[in-house]
Length: 193
Ligand code: B4P
Image 1 (cartoon, protein in one colour):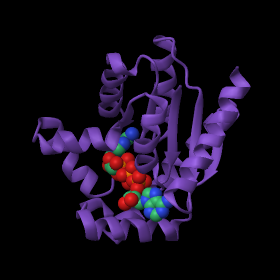
Image 2 (image 1 turned 90 degrees about the vertical axis):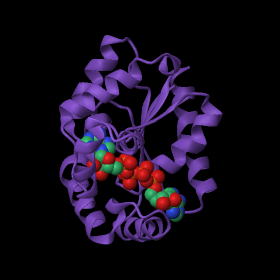
Image 3 (image 1 turned 30 degrees about the horizontal axis):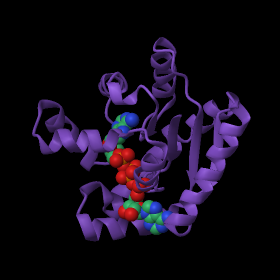
Image 4 (image 1 turned 90 degrees about the horizontal axis):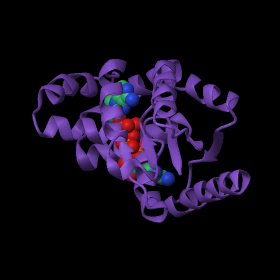
């Protein structure tokens, strides 16, 4: 299964991907986690990424494509993957299509987690108080939501046109959201069987 979990920052992509990877037996590839690992390692990329991420901005498409090509080329991604945080704009969606076409592994489905902005701000405040992620402070979250609306949200229509988009309600208990995603994935598997 080749799956993209899509949604606004704080919509639960990372949270749900971490749960689904056990069941599906495929890796969870989070561009945010990959970048945070670079920051922790104090690599050149990490140094560049830190100020951009802390400000709630997006890294350049070139940098992100390099990261994603490298990660999708690793052996554990051969049977499939859960992509979280990529693509984040139309150029990245086109680039991902091209990479996957080249390796003969087209996407099966894109699950969009639908969560209202007010709930997202509340969730990020909770995480900010718990983990202190600089991009979770309320002003930065509002900036990230504006970038999402402007640059990332149009990606949903890109996949809808290709018949790959499924929208799932992302509000509620974690188990309930996971169950809704599994139902949507079950429909995808049944349709392609
Ligand atoms: P990400 O790491 O992708 O950050 P995120 O969008 O906030 O998602 P995350 O997975 O962490 O949160 P989740 O929704 O699970 O990106 C960080 C930054 O990296 C970007 O701003 C950008 O700078 C850079 N970047 C990454 N990819 C890029 C790309 N492709 N191009 C350019 N730049 C890129 O969860 C949020 C919170 O909600 C958690 O605390 C969780 O516990 C809670 N939560 C989840 N589900 C819940 C539920 N059902 N109810 C209540 N709370 C819930």
